[in-house]
Length: 97
Image (cartoon, rainbow, N blue to C red; front, side, top):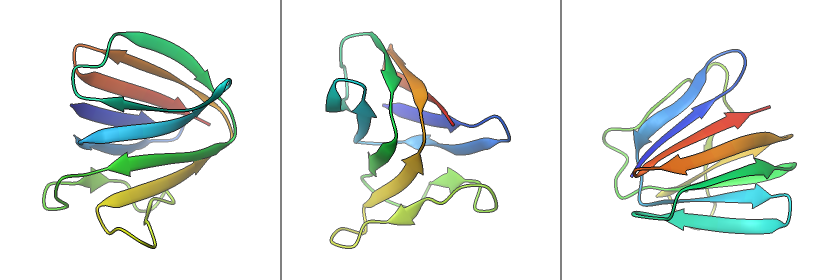
């Protein structure tokens, strides 16, 4: 599936991913390939991006604080204050604050 993370300042991340875990307002949840369409509000927390490989990752290093997870270099994390997520047709868009 394709993940795009956008902030008011810039596109922070844009790439194919295996899954994404987000801090929903009712708790953390994960989306995998072919997930049902969903729109949800996000609260303060960490977005975890699970990648198959890091060879084609594109993200804005100047604006984002996307860092490799301590235990797994194929997991990237991004702290957010709030946001909105939409999943439709294997495309995930996170509007992050």
